[in-house]
Image (cartoon, rainbow, N blue to C red; front, side, top):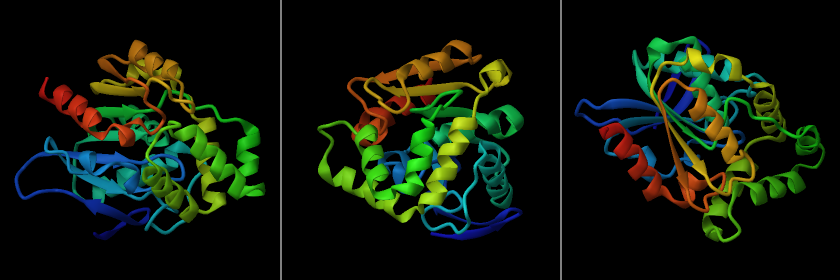
Length: 252
C-alpha cells in the first residue's frame, strides 16, 4: 500500500480501487484509530472504490496529529488533491465523521455523499479523560475499550482494537480527543447539501444515538439506520449489516 506526498505532508493509505470505474470513497477513521478501524467488508465494498488513509500520527502515517478537526480535514482534502479525485463519497467513523462533515460543509463540491457512523455534529469529551490519556495511558486505553465495545464483542476484535490504540501515542490520542471536544457545527448543518446515511449503534456508550438523531433531523437529506444492540464499534461488530445498509442506500 502506498505513501503519497501531499501539500500537507506524506500520508499512507490502503488503496482498494479497482480497474473498473466506480464511486470513489474516502474512509476516515476515528480518534486513536487507523484504516483497520474499518472492517474489510467496508474497505472492499463492491459499491465503491475505497481509499482508507491513516491520519497523520496514526497507523503508518508520520506526524504529530492535530487538535482541530479542520486540520485533519485539510489533510484529507490534500490527499484527494494528490490522488486527483475531484469528488468522493466521504465515510467517517466517530472523529472521522466530524472530519467528513467539515469537508462537506467547507468544500461541498468535493462531497458526493456522506456515510456517518457513530458520530454527531458535536462530540463532547469529558475533560478528565483528555487529561488521563497522557497521565495514565494504560488505564485510560482500557477504559476507552470498555466504552467502545459491547460486553459480548469477540475477544479477537477487541484485542485488535487495543493494538491499534497501543500504537498511537498518548499525545496524539489526547489531541484527537481535544479536536472532538472542540467540534460543534450544529448551527451550520443546514449548509451541508450532500445526501447522508447516518448509522448509529443502539447501545453506543461513547457517541449517544441521540447525536445521530440530531444529525438526521437537521441535515437536508439524511437517512438513519440504527443497528440493534450495536456499540460505538457497531460497524466492526456487525460488518455485514453495515455493508448492506450502505449498499441499499447507494442503490436508492
